[in-house]
Length: 104
Image (cartoon, helix red, strand yellow):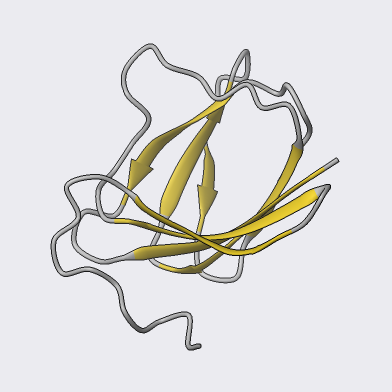
């Protein structure tokens, strides 16, 4: 499998594909193309999440923090369980390809 292949041409919503899964871990490939978390929604996850952005650009908002976390290719971000966060922006002109690891 090549992480950069087989991305749908049309992405009305984020493309999420589970690459591997076990009892305490899930590894996903996510492709965003201008997608954001809906207004007023926050992720509040039961498991920790570590992400790496491979292509594109994104901005993440952490609840209670005034500044956005801007991500470029190669940047990683650790999100502890129950840290409320949202995707504020992804590049609408190119694919933002993420690998997300969710674990206990």
